[in-house]
Image 1 (cartoon, rainbow, N blue to C red):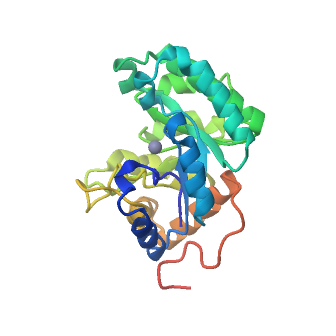
Image 2 (cartoon, rainbow, N blue to C red):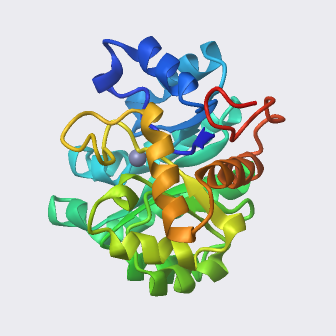
Length: 272
Ligand SMILES: [Zn+2]
């Protein structure tokens, strides 16, 4: 299985990162895509992924970081992003996107849109897929995607929209990644959304350390919990969890252009 979105570089994992990775592998999660949050973390993230088999990274500026960053630095950060991507190794541009709460917290939506456009321009230049965050800003993102081409596609991570919104975003050519909420007891909306996504556009993620799936809610999330997310999606689709693991790993591998699958990918731990 591939965890298509996991903040393994987060401080929450500083004390036991190796053990977290070992548990992920034991749970059948062979590869992880780790999207950056902001410029301060890019170099360390690159070093971590280069030193660790199975880890891949994206570079970008998370919209939730923008309220803490002076707007006058945005252009410089985007130029730095271009330069960092030119060094190679990244599998995506991101995390980037639009965030309704950040707009309320001091990063107005027009600034967020400008920064996101900068990310998309860089993605076009480097022909990389984008990892998109979208929280309570779906209409604004949809309007922007109608104007901006994505030459290498991308993913709407931790999809929080409805099935109807899935259908609205499908023409943009994006993938949809599902996280912990598909495991919640009253998870009707994410399950209906998962059913609306064509199988070849479906991805799994933990978004660890956030979005902890049931039955671990309240604690720190980690990539070893990805099989719980797979089971939640599998229940929504009425197919075996192993199949969801295999389909989504294949999709992630194609989207992020990851090297050839190791033997037994998608298989449950201890099987094959
Ligand atoms: Zn994230």
